[in-house]
Image (cartoon, rainbow, N blue to C red; front, side):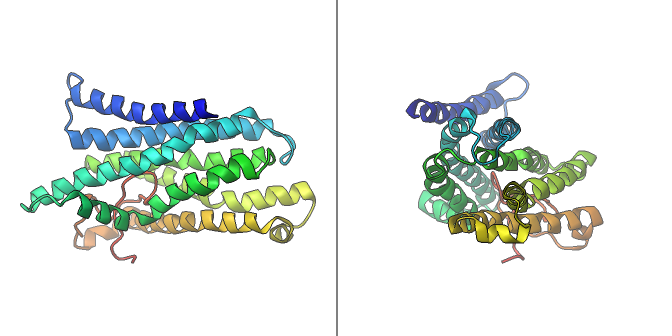
Length: 292
């Protein structure tokens, strides 16, 4: 167990540092520290998402009995991925910090002190930081110890939620380089809309449907048949996904109808337009100033 945790603790920060170093020093690139940090953090998020989705697909396909069947990859990948959520909190703060410095420089004001930056980061990204903390402090022990080896199929399906992350990260990179007018951004936005809905919103009703089919009970009876902890956990995990999906839908409407062209731009620390489809997930995100 400790060796797998140690491997994850080395892999994700190590990949981030290697990527940042390459982008800063590779001949023909020599990106700035800010650009290298932001792109590297999204690269690591995409790699983790691909690994998690691959593991989830293997696990789900291998479990014929969705309750009793086990797969060694389930617990192993959970242990490997836990350090990612700790690392990602720091990586998101670095993205916020560098973008904040750029904003302060453009406004010719003094750079904000670290304590103030941390407060601003926690205020702005509270939901995402809370999500990561819960993944480590609640979901990790529940998945590894409380399940007692049962329900690997459901855990594998949950891993598939990460399928939407690469398109989220690509969209943010395109916006960072002001490519939101391109066909690639629109195609990627449509892909993100579909994958996020299927993998992060529909996923939870599907888990109830799968158990109902397994137990030969109607779908509406499943919440009454499973432990109350399962219902509470599913509700807490699904609620932010629905909220983020609503933001994606609003962004998609503005992007594909061109509604944002008729509105005055609203400045923020990301320097990203309000027409972005991006939800505040798996990285630094645009603030929806009119949604609070």
